[in-house]
Image 1 (cartoon, one colour):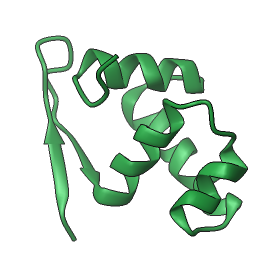
Image 2 (cartoon, one colour; image 1 turned 180 degrees about the vertical axis):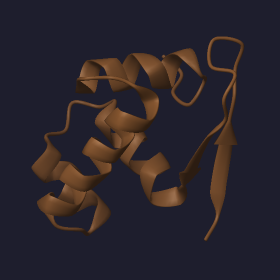
Image 3 (cartoon, one colour; image 1 turned 90 degrees about the vertical axis):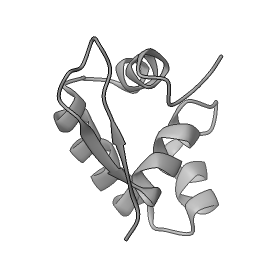
Length: 79
């Protein structure tokens, strides 16, 4: 399985993301609902819930907005 390793000055510990997690973050930074994200990824909404909860814990955020801000900060998503 491919993974992406991220690190930045603000986040010295690398965060390894697999392709599905990376795609989830991209979609989470859009206006799509979690149900629509599940549809786009061809997974169940419950699987999307798992990605969300896992990533929230790993990057130490408590909301989708926090995840989006983190993704911009580390350069995963460009505005």
